Amino acid sequence: MAHATTARLTPDSPWPAQGEWSYEDYLNLPDNGCRYEIIEGVLYVTNAPDIDHQFIVVKIVSQIEQFVAGNKLGYVLTAPFEVHLSEKSRPVQPDVLFITSERWPGSGAKYFEGAPDLVAEVLSPSSRRTDQVIKFIAYEQAKVPEYWIADPKTRSVQVFALDGEEYALSGEFAGEEVIESRILTGLKIVTASLFISS
Image: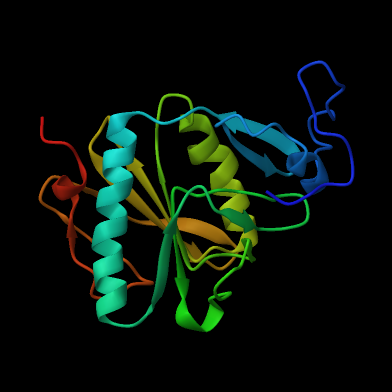
């Protein structure tokens, strides 16, 4: 983690008011295993995800990566990795992100500046509202072209694509349906393959 110019924040020290968090404040947070994100100046803290969440993340990453690498389209990353969407929304740490070769920041980069080409979030009980509302709006405003939301509860994936200034639902997929992507044309992922067999 980068060196900061002020003292590291502790539970006993005064923390910034919600809405006023900065990236410098983030750099002073304790390294305690939690996932910290700042969206529009508001700090969000997420504990370690459960096995269902991580299983889905791995499945999404492995299948997208195979397609992306095979077609030399770019790179796929997972959290924890910082994305700086804007001055007030940094860092955001998507579960999965795809960046085209042309926009790849290169080896040694500490973060990605701007909107990834595709972002995927996997819902968990503690992140459901954040992923479906807070991050939805943040990704939309930052103009992330495509946003996937995978739901372990319904065993489904919603794909939203940017239509002008707003997201439009381009598909909701479940069971043996093949997920369709506007950004990764030709990608074929059977929805059920992303979830632990019941």
